[in-house]
Image (cartoon, rainbow, N blue to C red):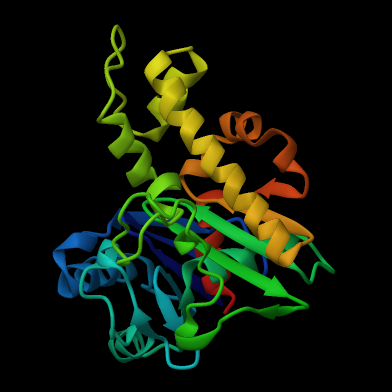
Amino acid sequence: MLKCGIDIGGTTIKGALFEGANPAPVRELSVPTRGREGREAILGQLFSLLDALCKKDVGFIGISSAGNIDPETGRCVYATDNLTGWTGTEIARLVRERYSLPCKADNDAICALKGELAFYAGVKDATMITLGTGVGGASMVAGNIVRGRNFAGGRWGHLCLNPAGNRCNCGKVGCAETYLSATALMRESGKEDFSPDPPPRDVKELFGLYNGGNPAAERVVGAFGKYLCRLLTEIKTILAPEIIILGGGVAAGRGVIGKLIGKESENVVFARLGNLAGAYGAANL
């Protein structure tokens, strides 16, 4: 029997089929989320991906989604405008009814953490940070996932790193997400002149310019590094986890990030499943 894991992010919905406990996908696909277009647009993209993946031999669908997710009901309790109108969506129920398959849903960073911990037998205290369109966070303490009231616990992307800083789409000021996400990096890049190089089109190009010594890239990426170190320091002070796992699209630039965090790299590891950590964790819910 195959298990289908879906990871709904602000930019991309990733889907993969897994067999047993093997983290190597049998098949994987992705579609744009269309997250700013509203609930029906997101559901349309989700269903188009599931239609392509769940043709036969699939016995379970797991959904990893950004936002505060009630794991018992599979309902999104709260999501920012990265997924406009997603708050209140009964994700698991809608998928069960459409595909007549068992389905569970949970927060994306929690799924990614559970997926990654398959490689760390015996670890009971760990934190996951996903650096993507937004910044996701999840923590396990003494073997239990931290959920908190309204399933908002462990959302490190909304820890305040600068009380006088940027306005976040969650309504607060200075959140980690406004400094460490791909969205934040490209916003700050738009304020700079990268001459004689062309401006970066994405984070991968920005990191490439940084490695090449472009002064504008050094300013943008340098500021990113300072805020990332600040976040890591706060997590270590508050929870002292055995490991902190960095995942998401931005963390694919591990060479750059490794240099930026320097002494804060102790107990920090990069996601071994890469961008499929959420999907793999979801498939094993």
